[in-house]
Amino acid sequence: MSTTTNSEKLKSEWLDRLDGLVNQVAEWAQEEDWSTKRIETRLKSPSIGQYSAPALVMQKETVKVLLEPITHSAPGADGVVDLYLMPGLDDIASFYHSDDGWMTHYMSPNSPTVQKIREATAKPLTKETLSNILKEMSRNGS
Image 1 (cartoon, helix red, strand yellow):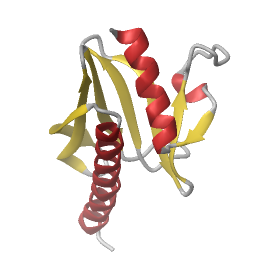
Image 2 (spheres, rainbow, N blue to C red; image 1 turned 135 degrees about the vertical axis):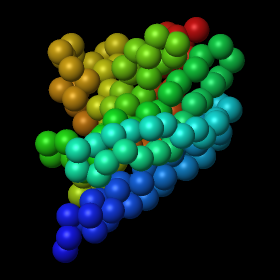
Image 3 (cartoon, helix red, strand yellow; image 1 turned 120 degrees about the vertical axis):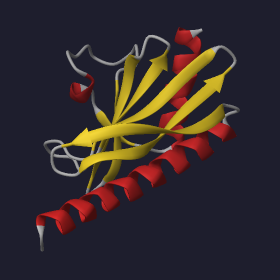
Image 4 (cartoon, one colour; image 1 turned 45 degrees about the vertical axis):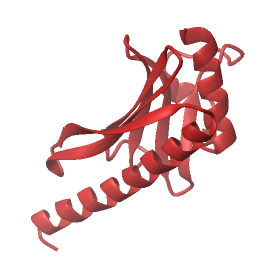
């Protein structure tokens, strides 16, 4: 397979995973009375070039959150997406995709203190997990 064909395949697979994540998170957030707006962001990767990727802005009352793709590849993951509290873009949670699906690394106030989000205990990304993160963000971000 040529390098161009391989990079197009990697990009296509990443954008499909990302599209599925953005759609699922938007659906779950709307069920929790968050308004959502899908946006496009520009990314650049040495292995797949420059491209547009979906992101998601969520808002409930005065709390705004951004779900932003970071990279299609990282050690132990085939996709990383961060969840930020806006406007300061405080890193609240990271989602990592692997063979087990999307996993969440999130430091709640009750979690053991760690240096980096990725060191927080990983949990599968579910509606309940996302709901808990968004509820906590609403309490602490408004």
